[in-house]
Amino acid sequence: MKTGPAYVFVILALLSRTGVAAQGAAEDRWQLRQLFEPSATQLAVEKRGRVFIYDGLNDTDVEQAMDEEYDRVHSMMFIRTVVTDVQGEPLRDPDTGELVVEDDDCD
Image 1 (cartoon, helix red, strand yellow):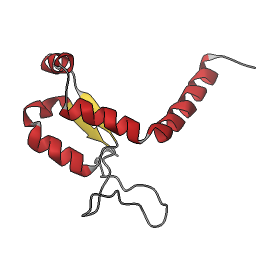
Image 2 (cartoon, rainbow, N blue to C red):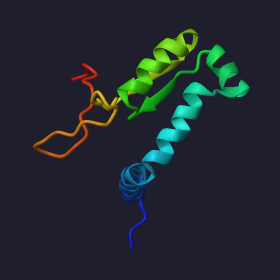
Image 3 (cartoon, rainbow, N blue to C red):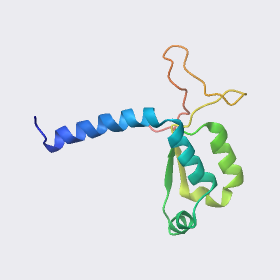
């Protein structure tokens, strides 16, 4: 079996994709704790300029962060934000079944 750098990269890419799907809610909880209950260490690194990229959170969580964590917004970036309905449930594309995410305007 080959174990060159390209092979390792492909395996890691596949595992990370599967891992994200498998972790799902646990990953969201970790990100939400980071967002709404930051440690003293996290606040210190944010103060020094570190930006944390939050991936796949619900739009309701992002709105809450904008309201409640306004002083820290400069240290936050949100990508693949999931659109929710009025009950807060994630919307799915009727054709593909994929979660509906906000357009980040990056083409």
